[in-house]
Image (cartoon, rainbow, N blue to C red; front, side, top):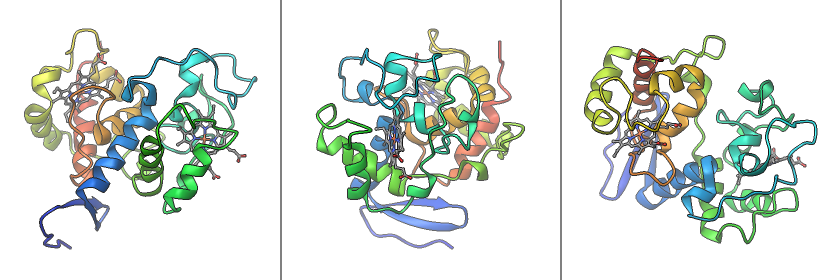
Length: 233
Ligand code: HEC
Ligand code: HEC
C-alpha cells in the first residue's frame, strides 16, 4: 500500500507495511546504526584500549576496542547468543536486542548509561538518544532478508547489479576491489552477510558512504545478493 507523504517525510518499507519517518528521526536512526557499529569512530573519540567491563572472561579471543562496540555483544543481527554470535570469536552468551524493538527510547537510553554499560560520559546525550532510537525503531528482521543456514541474501542479484553499478561502483569498483585497503566486497558479503546488510542500511562509520535505509529493504537485500556474486579473492 503506497501512501502519498507530505514534504519533510521519508518512507521506509518494512515487508509490506510502510512506516513514515520524519527526516530528523530517520537521520537519527541511521546515525544510531553507525554508532552501534563503531561509536568511537563516529564521534572521532580516541580508540578505547580497555576491555569492556561486561565482556565475559570466558572469551579470551577478543579484548580492548573490539569489545567496546555494541555489535560485539549484541550482534550485527541484534540477536546476540541466539544469532550469528552463538559461536565463533564473538561468542559471549549475551542476549540480543530484538525484544527491545518498540520500547521507549528514554528507557533504552537509561540502559546504555547503566552500570553494566557505562557509556555515560563517553558519548553525548544526543549520541545515546540516537542509539536508543536505532534500537527502538531502526531494527530490521534480518532473517527476512538473509537465509540463516546458507548465509545467502534473499534478493534478486540481477536487480542488485543495477543498483550496485549506479550507486556503489564509483567508490567500490566493478568487481568490489576498491578502495584498495579494504577487503574484497564479495568476500565480506559471503563471510558475514549480517554485517554487510547493517552497513548497506546505515553506511560506514566516518565515511561518505550512503545509507539505503530510506528505500524498501528489499533493495538492500538485492544489493547484498549481487555482492555475494562478486569475486572473493
Ligand atoms: C561488553 C558487552 C556489551 C556491550 C559492548 C554492550 N552491551 Fe548491551 N548488554 C550487555 C549485557 C550483559 C546485557 C544484559 C544485562 C542484564 O540483563 O543484566 C545488555 C543488555 C542491553 C540492553 C537491554 C536488553 C534487554 O532485553 O533488557 C540494551 C537495550 C542494550 N544492552 C543496548 C546496548 C547498546 C546500545 C550498546 C552499545 C552502545 C551495548 N548494549 C553494548 C552487554 C553489552
Ligand atoms: C562515496 C563513496 C562510497 C559509496 C558511494 C559507497 N561506499 Fe561503501 N565504503 C566507502 C568507503 C570509503 C568505505 C571504507 C573503506 C575502508 O574501510 O577502507 C566503505 C565501506 C563499505 C563496506 C564495509 C567494508 C568493511 O570493511 O566492513 C561495505 C559493505 C560497503 N562499503 C558497501 C557499499 C555498497 C553496497 C554501496 C552502494 C549501495 C556503497 N558501499 C557505496 C565508500 C563508499
